[in-house]
Length: 429
Ligand code: NAD
Image 1 (tube, rainbow, N blue to C red):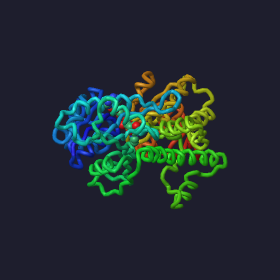
Image 2: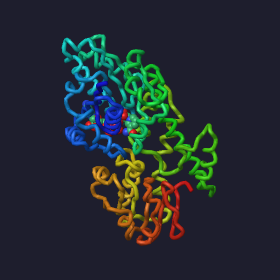
Image 3: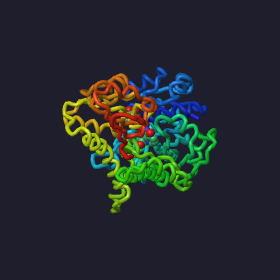
Image 4: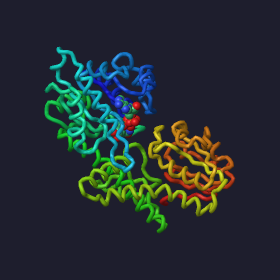
C-alpha cells in the first residue's frame, strides 16, 4: 500500500521505515527540512538501534521524505499523523501541532484530482491524543479544509513502541489497536497483515483511552516500586529483593518494578498529566494518577537529599552526573530525571561534570554551561561525588574509575554499581 507519514520523530521515522520493511511504499513528511534531508540521505534523525540499517535498505526505493504534504498525501491511500502532543503549561495536552497537521492534510486532500477524489483515503492518528480528539478535533479539521468527499476515513492507531527498542517493538508488537469504523479499520489492518499479532478493533475514543491507560498503568508500577523502595530504605530492606519476589506473581509481573530515580521520557509524564487534565475538565479528580506524578517528581530530589547528607555544602564541589538520557539506549532527554537534578545542583553552586554515551548534545541545549565529558572516567576524575542517573549498561562495569575521584561518594539512582569502598548509597536501597 502507499502510505504517508506526517512527522518524522521517534514514532514517525520508525513507523515509516518499518512499513517500508513490510513492503509498503512510504513518503515521510516533516516541517523540519534538516530531518527531511537526513532521511533522504539514509540517516535517521533519531538514535534507535537497528534503524540505520533498515532505513538504508529502503531509502530511495520504498521510502523517501519531503516537506510537501501534497506530494505525500496525493500519492497515498493512508496518512498517519505522528506529530508531537506535548504538555501545555497546565499539564493538559497541547494539540496545536495535531491541529496544524490535520489542517494541512485536509487541504492536501482537497487538492485531489477529479479522478482521485473518489478514491478512499484513511487518515490515522498515531500520535497519543486524549479521548475524543480524533473525532472532535482531527476529523472536523480535515473536513473543514476540504478533505471530505465522503471518501475520507478516520482511524486511531496508538503506538506502544519503547524508545531504544522501537524497531523490535514495532515489528513484534504484543498488541495492535485500531479504532474507527469497519472500513477504516480494515484498511489500516491491511498494513499490518504481515505481522503475526492479534488486532484489537474498537472505536476511536476507546483506542485513544487504551494508550493512556497503558502508559498510566506502567507509570503507576514505577511510582509504586519507588514508594515501596522509599519505605524499604528507611527499614533497611532491599527493595530489589522485594520486587523480584512479588514480580513472580503472574498477576503483577516483574516488569517496571525497578525502584530508582523515577520515570522520564516523552510519554509517561506527559500522558499521565494529560489524562489528569482531561479528567479534571470532566470534573473528576484522579487521586491515584496525581500521586503517581507527585512521587515521580520527588524521586530526583531524593538523590539531592542523599548527596547533601554526605556533602553538606555542594558549592564549588565537582559532582559527576552519569547518564543524561531519560533511559538507556536512546539520545532522548525529554523529562529526563537528570534535568531536575542538574538544575538543583547548579542552584546550589555545584560544578557539574556530566557524561552520557549519546545524549550530551541534546542536553547541551538545556544546560549549555556544564562540563560535558567524553567518558565516565573523565567525569569522575577529581569529583567530590557521583550521581548515577541512567541505566546505561557501561555504568555496570565501572569500578577502578571511581578511584580517580577526590573522594568516593556514589549515589546510585538506577542500581547500576556495587562498590565495596568509599560511600555507596542507592536511592531506595
Ligand atoms: P517527536 O517530537 O520526536 O517528532 C515529531 C515530529 O513532527 C518532529 O520531527 C517535528 O519536526 C514534526 N512536526 C512538527 N509539526 C509538524 C507538522 N505540522 N507537519 C509535519 N511534521 C511536523 O515526537 P515522537 O516522540 O515521535 O512522538 C510523536 C507522538 O507519538 C506523540 O503523540 C507521542 O506521545 C507518541 N508516542 C511517542 C512514543 C515515543 O517513545 N517517543 C511512543 C508512543 C507514542
